[in-house]
Length: 137
Image 1: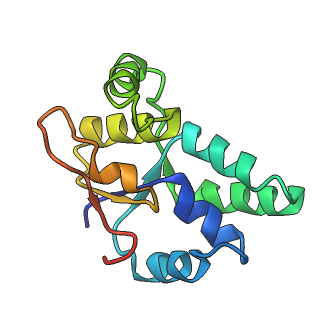
Image 2: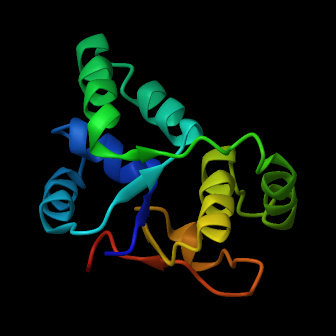
């Protein structure tokens, strides 16, 4: 099955029972049949947003070790990440968003799980939109 890039929002929601998308995150994980891919920028952002509990942060990190494919090429993507951040500065495209779009381009991933509406606007180099499958996979 094709890979799905995973953004910060669904991962925070999965580990924060009070998040309004917690149920959707659990349902998404249950129905996901493809490999889930993310990167260190997203891992960092998730951990930062789970700062209400060191225990929850460590539970997330332990889950991430086997629960997602953590892409290791973000450093090589930096020139493209900068281009994306500049192009979408009015949204704005933060590091996590831009790095995921660059990851999708490089690995030819056509789907993303996100709660972020900005991905409806972002386009890859070949002018395609990455399809959000979080709410309706």
